Image (tube, rainbow, N blue to C red; front, side):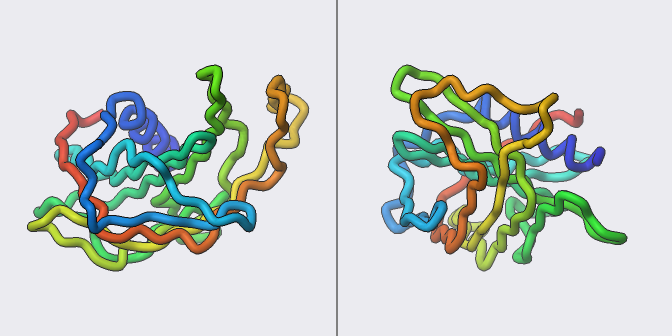
Length: 189
């Protein structure tokens, strides 16, 4: 749970300090299927590797269209280069013995009045880095995850928006190709 919390805190700090990138690599692409419908972002907000000396590193991909923002984050031990290991990273809601969550997925609804709503909690997910070019600072891979609304009455969020959101938010067939990323160093928490 502590590792999940540290991933979440690092993710939130990146989301709030990241800048929009308008100079995205023209060869980059990203797409997914969300609840059975094809989805492509209209904006890549940030693709960032944050290195925390003596601790770990976190890779964050933050993208959106006019109604949904996705944040994909995954961690690894600190490397000597400006890249992430090529492997699969997983989120487990209830890890079994030996399983460690090293990924986190957040979906946020965006409304035209400027309001946002994040009401789904991840249940499972994976992101696989299939290639990374440290010299060019580009990354490619696949992702999928499933999140659900909390059903506990104590945590239930009152839906005040005119259109309700589904109980399950499922992303399949997620693919990102040659996303340009930046590298930053952050002080240890």
